Image 1 (tube, helix red, strand yellow):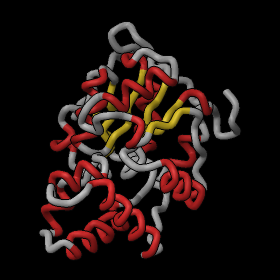
Image 2 (cartoon, rainbow, N blue to C red):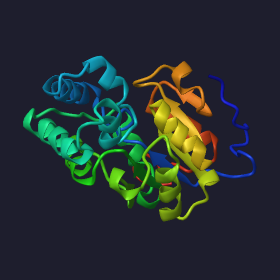
Image 3 (cartoon, rainbow, N blue to C red):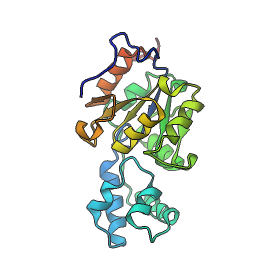
Length: 229
């Protein structure tokens, strides 16, 4: 998908001031681990693994459970899913380029906006050696999960930026929809979905290295590799 960004680095007169990152599929390579967890959970309940898997991307576990198995208690099943991830000892390595990019952004210039929960994200970030930002928005922080705009509106407010000054980095259709609904500019990273599936993003890129180039082109000041301007 071709970028519609202006070459000056400005979009509609607004300069990008903050970057809001999804976690799974954007910063952590968690697809294999999550596929195994959801597959195990599906088999426990006699559900079609492939159909359940398609409902998971970018969404809160409880929302997936509501759609896949409305007869089950979403919060109770979320606890089961968390236990499976822990018991199976599955790893979620960082996406290529994640560590380098995050360390080039001041801690108050970016946020996590995820459908996951705080404890598991902190645990996985520590294991992956990734830094954490000042602002973090989790599934339980909002009434409605992605594709609703709530999470990105909250993140922009907490980071003290107009949503139009925020760049969202997402890998799923639900996440792209949430960022767009909030009024943010959205970069779709094609790690888990094809560009055609992320058609509502302002631009699609293949990896975080290209995402960093887009941020720089939009006037967002990245630190050097030594942590300095």
